[in-house]
Image (cartoon, rainbow, N blue to C red; front, side):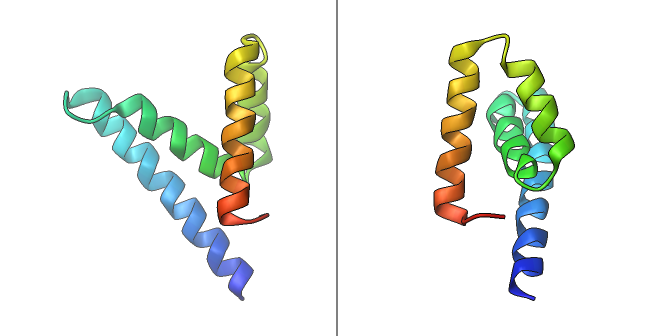
Length: 82
């Protein structure tokens, strides 16, 4: 039950961050791109489709791909393995 609750919380946070990011693209005082990136990283922990999409689009840029991998490892250390 705890693992199921953790999954729901992480997916909910991911969706909330993406919504904040979309709002932030319109409003000048929110950093929309940052919120979208955090939301995608959270969702990619549980969604292989989003993970594959992120890998496909960041492999073109090795520095960005390395940053995404480090951010994902950092999130796994804090949150734990999905």
